[in-house]
Length: 207
Image 1 (tube, helix red, strand yellow):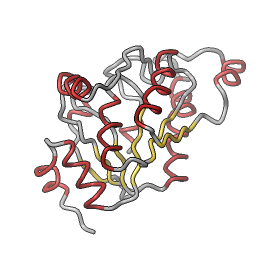
Image 2: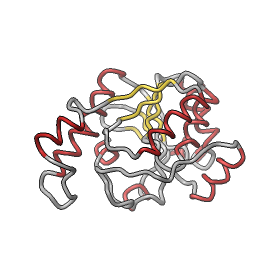
Image 3: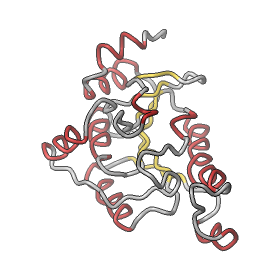
């Protein structure tokens, strides 16, 4: 199927739920939805599972999440009956830290290798093993300057269709959706590969 990406973005780019229906029902592609369970992630998880309840929800658990985040994961998995598939680094946090110490600072030359180990390699493994044709993500344009340049639907070099339904939503839009559907949130979140809110870890720049 040849996709007219510009036409799709023009038609569905401002309507997340219509975009999800188009992708899951209209396209009929094998899809996954990635999540890191950061603030407002319940929005995309609720949206996609309303259309396809058993869609694989893929989480790269670095082992460095907050206690609140792990509790939120258990809560939202039970609440939405998520088909959660978790990918871990090949070494445990305890193993890595025993040999190399705590998380390196972002200006430390070892930080890139840390990011590769705990996030990028597990994601590459997930793509190889699950071989999705469509990938849902909760990216939002207001998160970083790089994301502000993205489109809700794009196709990467390998033909994977990347879909960001809430790309053009604001934090207020996300909050109102959570309120309307009585969904929980998680603000006690920390990503050691990014550290700073407006910094990219590299995952979405590579894909």
